[in-house]
Length: 387
Image (cartoon, rainbow, N blue to C red; front, top):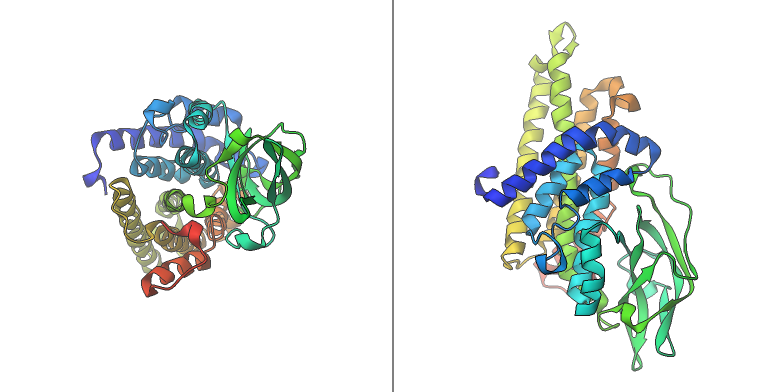
């Protein structure tokens, strides 16, 4: 796949690869066990330019394209898919929403601080009724003098060390009902971060519920027009889906590389494991599938970078790559036998993280519904997924 990368893309990928293998991988098992990533790792990502990678240069970022950003996420996920998943939200979804919907004042307030790691942002939409079923959401913004009040609760918010939350909520303006986006500070009165969930995978992301009890929202903390936020961020969501697909791809690739090393060293039934045809056949299929995923992903990011997307490629990547990565991790874990069940080997976390990806950022079924609606030319309620 390297044949079409330019010099800047190759350089940033290699920087990420060195960091991932030398600094992140030695801590990956600890991140999984402790259910948290050290703040020092996030700071190193700031120093390397990762957090500001997709932020334009005029707002203190690197100004790289989506292809470069996904290359970095893939490399990080080879070491720790959980940490890469956390960064995907911070590198793509949050700053891109702020840039797309924000005024110049809001961009200047949010983006440079985000690139410097001084303002870690989180994104929150999901409620008990689901993420996409926004008409059933209960979190609501109501007018209050020159500002607003926010009340409600969200589930499964990927928080990490977030200081600022980008929150989707039901809104009303001039008698019209809508769905909008607001900025909430972690220290705001009435805002609370509840107990983190104990999860199967993505254990380093500190996922949990948040709630709003009459939280004051100033007019300057509303992103966009209050009514059309869900549809307005659709292009950003497509990019975010590709970022998550990159972490799934890196997850499977990282497990593949460790499994190949293991197979080379192990003897099974009196023969080197690397000579057993069931193993070699499975490895060949897995390598081929991952290269197919890589071709889909980076063709899609290139189309996005060139503003040539005419299909929901982000949803295609999220559905196909995440499902394929999970299937590959399942096959790879089987090659480890009983050793793969032991947390000490550090490989079953790849399997668990790959499984988590099948529901994070929209389930496979939701993405397939969005894709098929486009193929069939049918109307859809999945406006926030469509680019």
